[in-house]
Image (tube, rainbow, N blue to C red):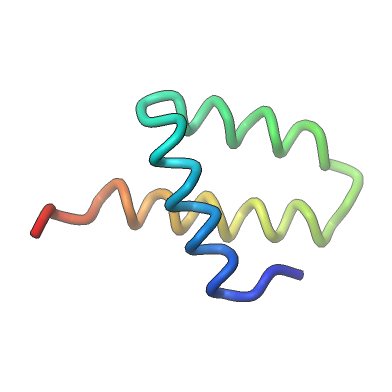
Length: 59
């Protein structure tokens, strides 16, 4: 299982790399790991972090 820090680092990198296509990227990753409960949970946490990053107001 990924650490909280790893989740946020991965989420930030995904948003930076994929921008508006982030959701499509995450859906593809989830479809690749559906049989692995730990990987699915990690990707769920990454997706939640991506949502938080996307919803944050710029400072």
